[in-house]
Amino acid sequence: MRCVADEKSERTLPATGWAVLGLLSFGEELSGYDLKKWSDRSLRFFYWSPSFSQIYSELKRLEQAGYASSRLVAQETGTRDKRVYRITDEGMAAARQWARETPADPPVLKHGPMLRLWLGHLLEPGQLREVLLRHQEFAEEMRLRAVADAEAALDEPAWAYPALTLKWAERHYASEGALAAAMLDDIAALESGG
Image (tube, rainbow, N blue to C red; front, side, top):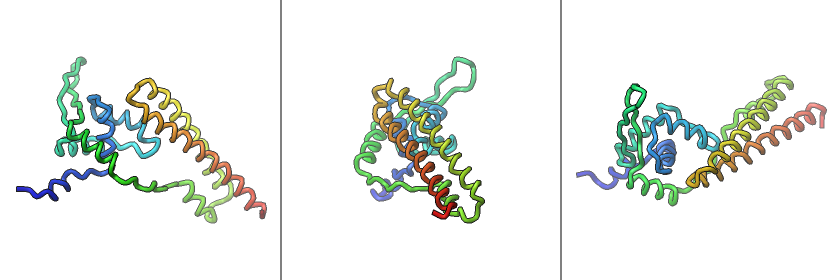
């Protein structure tokens, strides 16, 4: 007979597991490939997009925990069968409980351009400006992608909250571009002795 503590520890998921379960919570049967596409169109803007291997590992874990079920679907093209996954009632209850009760972790800032700025004394001034200019370009590209994906998400009523999250991402990347521009001004002032 297993004790309750053992059962609870088996059901503890890493962040990637909750993210995959969250993707399944929208109620569609999805393959691992579909989950990767969905995460690339949503999660990557504010968290990260798990790799295929992470997604498949988490799907296995979710099935073992009873949070997801799967079935094979025959392909019309004659290629091998595709496995699709669906959230179970127990998985939906766990996802709801996690979303409602788990304290929000403070965001972790892991910012490559800031690290390079911090080490600016090791770079030529032009190199640091180039890093910040590339960061501005990246931020603008991500902002525009978030806008486009938010517009596409608005077509689906179930995606209203993910669309709001993408709006947050749009604002985040706009501010990243503005911060990089301000840092370029600060570097110019530092170099001129100001």
